[in-house]
Length: 190
Image 1 (cartoon, one colour):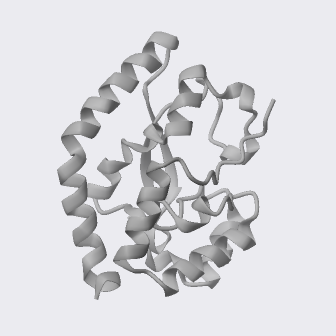
Image 2 (tube, helix red, strand yellow):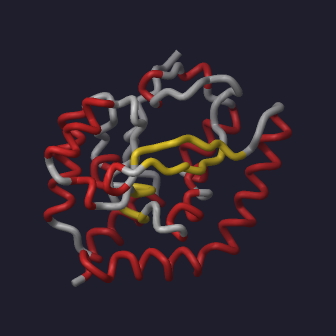
């Protein structure tokens, strides 16, 4: 029941409850980003969503302007700003994705959305039926430290999540993420 109807209801109610505090946090983070340098505070990138439909994902910008449209594991750690390091470590860079959740493009927990250029991952997820799910702000694969540089392993973890979705499992994933567990972000260390 939760997997079919409750997950979306849970996402919307929780997103509405935390929107105001999240907006205030985003404002403070945006000011810090702008004080560190030029460029937009909000990063927009087209990702692959539910049913393989593209959507625009929103995040607080953590990398230098001009880094390009690449996956994290293809980017050097030198391209992450000082403020960006803090935002990534605390997961605050994900707060603007509440917009994506409210629009129905994302869920709080699910497979992390990838770029269309990550063709192996897109195909592996497609073969396993993962695209019936909305992508998540966090997910079990991310918490297990499985990143997009290992597409087959990641798609297998996403498919395992699809088979065992529960409210308690999603709550656990959210708490572990809030506590700073997992990475799922293999930036090349400079």
